[in-house]
Amino acid sequence: MSNQNEDVLHVVGGKPLHGTIKVRGAKNFVSKAMVAALLAPGTSVLRNVPEIRDVHVVSDLLRLHGIHVDVDGAQGVVTIDAKHVEMPSVADVDTLAGSSRIPILFSGPLLHRLGEAFIPALGGCNIGGRPIDFHLDTLRKLGAKVDKEHADGIHITAPNGLKGAKIHLPYPSVGATEQTLLAAVLAEGKTELSGAATEPEIMDLVAVLQKMGAIISVDVDRTFRIEGVKELKGYTHTALTDRIEAASWASAALATHGDVFVKGATQPEMMTFLNVFRKIGGEFDITDAGIRFWHPGGDLKPVAIETDVHPGFMTDWQQPLVVALTQAKGLSIVHETVYENRFGFTKPLVQMGATVQLYRECLGSLPCRFQQRNYKHSAVIFGPTPLTGQDIDVPDLRGGFSHLIAALTASGPSDVHGISLIDRGYADFRGKLTALGAQID
Image (cartoon, rainbow, N blue to C red):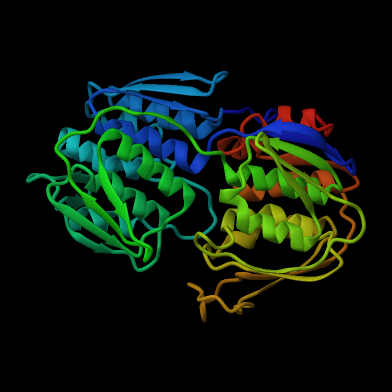
C-alpha cells in the first residue's frame, strides 16, 4: 500500500501533452481471463498484460487458492498453473476483501473444481450500486446453493454439480454475463443466456473459453448459448488493448491542446468514441501500430452524449471526456444511463473553474435505469472555461484519471491525492506522463 506521500502527485499544468505512450491489454478483460484459467487443471499463458494493481490482486487471490502464478511485468506475460486448487482460510481471503470485485467471479470455477466457494466482502469503485444479485441468481439457477448468512461473506456450494439452465438478465450486466459464462461452460447440459452484455472484453473472454474447449455461440439478439463440456484445457492468448485507457489519453491530448500517439490502440473497439472525438473537433490518425490523437487548434465543439452498453458510448469514456468538454465552446450535455453516481467527480472541476450543472432529469432519449429516481445522472457543461490548479481528492479510478487531466489542463499547480486508485487501471501512468512532457513530481 502506498504511504501518504507516495499517494500524492504534484502537477503543474497548462502545458500540452506531446509524445508517444504504449497501452497494453484491457483491465476489464485480463483479470477475467486470469480467473478463467481456474477452470482447467493445466497451464495458461496470457500475453499483453498491463502492469496494474488489479493484476496483482487477482494473482494473490489465485495463489491463496493454491494456484502457481508467475507475473512477468516487463514482458507483459502471466503464466498460471492451475493443476492444484485448494480452499484458503476465511482469514486469508479476507485480507484481500475490499481490494477488488473479482472474487465473485471465482464462484463458478471453484464450484467446478472444489464443489464450494467463499466470497468475501467486495470492493471496487464507488460509482453507484453494482449489486451482486444478478451473479447469485445466475448461480442458483445453475444449481448452486447460496448462504448469505455467513459471518464473513457468502458461502456457495453445488452438492449436485452445476446444470445448464435458461437465464435472462433484466439488464445487460457485464459482470453477470461473465459469471454465467465462467459457470456454464462446465455445467451439465445447455445454458441459454438472454439479455447478455456483448462488450469487446466479453467477446475476448469467449475467445479464451473457446480455446480452452468450451462451446459457445452468440446470437444477434444478445443471447449466448453454452453447451457444457466435461473438461477444459489451458490456453495461450494475447489480450485485446484497453480501449478505456486509450480513450483516456485521447481525452488528455484534447483537453491540453496536445498530440499523443497511443501505441497499441485499435480502431474496431473504439469506433463509437472516435466518432464523438471527431464531432468535438479532435483529430486522429489510425495506423497498424496505434492511433494518434491531437487537438488541431481552433475551438472545440459542444456535443450531446448518452452512455450505454456496447455498442453505445461507454460509461468509462465519459469522465475523461467531460474534462475536454469544459474547453469546448458552447453547451454540452452528458446523460449517464449506466451508473447513478458517476458525476461525483465533477465537484472538483467546478472548484477549478469549470461550469458544470447536474440534473436529476434524463437529458436524453435513451432508456434510462434512473428515470424518475433521485439521482443526478445528467450533466450540462458550458465552456470554454479556464481551469486553475487546486488540491484534489481522487474519488474512483476513472474519476481519478479525469482529475489528473484537469490538473494537466489547469494553469498553476495542483496536488492530486489518492492516486493509488489510478494504479488499478492505468499502468505506469507517472512514467507515461513524464514521457509526454508533463511537469509532475
